[in-house]
Amino acid sequence: METEADGGVYFVSDLHLGAYPEVERTSVPLLMDFLDHLERQKSTLYIVGDLLDFWFEYRTVVPRYPFRLLARLRTMVEHGCKITYVAGNHDYWMGSFLSDDVGLTTQTEFLDTSIGGKRFFISHGDGIAITGEFGYRLLKRILHSRAVSTGFRLLHPDLGIALANLISKMSRKRSSRNNNQPNLEAFIRQKANEGFDYVILGHLHRPKLFEVGRTTCLVIGDWIDNYSYGVFNNGKLRLERWKQSQ
Image 1 (cartoon, helix red, strand yellow):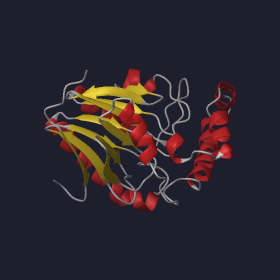
Image 2 (cartoon, one colour):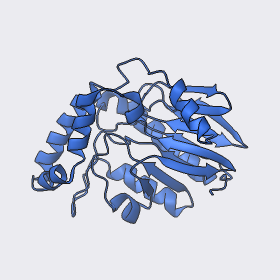
Image 3 (cartoon, rainbow, N blue to C red):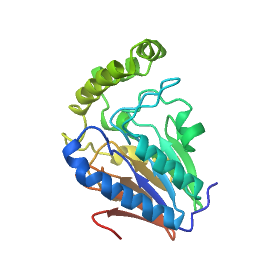
């Protein structure tokens, strides 16, 4: 059981850094400001997938682009913040780097955890958002396979990352940023029957906080159009937006 951090427990998802350079002139400074705020409070942070538009762990190479952000997360951990990363559909091959070198707790599937005495189901949510799309699910299974991972490592990193960016661009065309959100009520009722008090989801990009019976669902939104995040503090879950220094 995880106790509620004095500085609150925060949830972010779908930053897709590297995908929208024009947006990142605004979003990255705001993100760093947000992380400074969390570090000052020694908050707990859950990153619920797709921090970067593409993530692949080579055995001996770290991609250059996310270095500044990963170093920032490492500093937060060293200063007392607990950070958990729940993999998203753009986190194709997560290895040990984020846990061993950055200091994050990593989870490749959903997370079932207790915070402040309440039971939380935390998932990126792409399997929920795109039910019934056989082509999408087949592509995801192929991309996450050991054979593809092994073959990808044989490519020079410059070529591999360029190819991965192309794949991520294709995936974004199917993303729920461009489509209506599905009806989540049946899924939330199922989680309520399983005993969850809160359901936290990413992937859908459009922020929403709502209740189904006694279970509260937070669709976090994104850090592209909305700069939205969730915060659980003093036994309450809120949906907020980070627009300026706070």
